[in-house]
Amino acid sequence: MPGDDGHRRKLPLKPGGLLVWHTAEDGVRRASYDFGQLAVGPRLQREFAEVFAAQCSPTGAWKTLPSSRESWLVLLYFSRFLAEQDPVPESLGDLLPEIWAAWRLSRKPNSTGSRQIRKVARLLKEHPRVPEATRNLMKKRVPKEKSKETAYNNEEFDRIKLAAIQRFRPALHRIRANYQHLEDWRAGRIENGTDDWLVGEALNHLIRVGETPCYVGLGNRHRPDSRFTAALGSDRAEDTWMRLFMTTDEACALMILLIAAHGWNATPVIEMKVPDASPDAGNEGQVIYRVELEKRRRRQAARYETRNLADWGANSPGRLITHAIEATTPARETLKNVGSSTDRLIVWRLAQRRAVYGGGVAGLFAGHFHANVWRNWRHELGGGLSLNLRRLRKTVVIAHQRQPTQHSQDTHDGAYVLPDPRTHAAAQPAITDGVTDAIELARASFKAQISRADTEASKDTATTSCSDYTHSPFGEQGLPCRASFLLCTACPNAVITSRHLPRLAYLLQVLEELKAVLASEVWNQDWCEPYLRLWDLRQAPDFTEHEWNEALLDVSAQDREVIDQLVKKGFDA
Image (cartoon, rainbow, N blue to C red):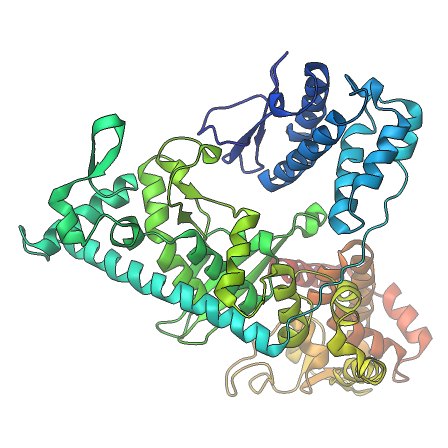
């Protein structure tokens, strides 16, 4: 079974061994997999361990523990299948084509079955001992099952969100009150010798070691210290460790609320780090969180995204982040105290230490959810409604945000909007109107004035001339405009003359080059709009084709430097 080894450095697989270690990409989280548990002979166990260890190595494909854990479970199923064959294969050389064909037929005809087939094939098909005929079968394409999941309706979505709020909010208030009690105790604001003082001492012990005061009794069992039991109320979880830590169900509720609020993928949410916070300049009391999201399936250049979420009070985008940090701060403090620091946002404590998480206090705190945790929510929600995080996210993307979040526009349309039943009734007119509106909006967004008369060079921006620098539609009236120069073509105060054409022609050329190399989601978010405005200007009859061509030839070194700096600032923003 997988397990955590603390902070010891482990090779993926020792010579002659059957225990494979996997260290996650962050270098902290680790898990072990004992291939001696597989229901096959020792030679096949070793061969499975070798191919598995290759994927767990620093150059392997698996960067997170969930990746290796899922493949481990699939290999467990596969080894049980092989153990039922007659004769049982003793090595990969005995994996005949008919055995592989039987394995494929034994899998359920759904997405889970297809995924199990693909994962085993991906692990074994390049192994030199696998017979060529079997390898050819492994390379045959396994069609992916089309997702049949649809978004929740409004009533279902509201029930899920309400249940999560009712689970998380009491936890927040409980932890907030007890953490404040601890702070008061530390500051000496509680009278010594009182029950409140004993509670403060117990909380201080809890945050240092993860347990309220106890002693080791008969049978080496930990028993609560009776001096504190009366002050705490009892030795039950709700009166002891739950005072400062969320339970697994409460952590699930927080994760549900984050997905329901922002439409993020489940994995980036569970792996999210505590975001950096900075005061909002000019708005006293407001905080802006810089949330970093990782999408592991993307290319490295577009793997990370950031979101700025401001907390200015109730119902603001960043308020849930504030509450999440508040509810999980004691858990992170405890892990730091015991030498297992973490920067994860969502941290919670298990009811009891499990072997799967390893020994020590850190083994009481979890960083991922097991599948059976989500099944508990069927009872929580009632009425036969089950919780599916993919459906939850799909609901947010389709019905609430109605725009791409951590995916491209093509994925948004093809995988989210078009297959959903609520889209079908009005699909054709909605799509037609949407395309028309998008084209009209793109053209209407070009608002700069075009003039054959020259303007004062002193009023030039990096791209155009400006007729009114203190009354920009993109800023506060009466104050100097601070908008990006890429927005000048969308400003009615901007004036474009023949003098500005070389820079604009060069800028259009640079943006065309960027379009060819940037990921579509990055291009659509940051560069598409200024490109479309320039393309509208290029197509307009105000300047001839000859003038555009001549302008590109007349680009000076200064023009190139100005535009290059402008584009660089766009990347740094």
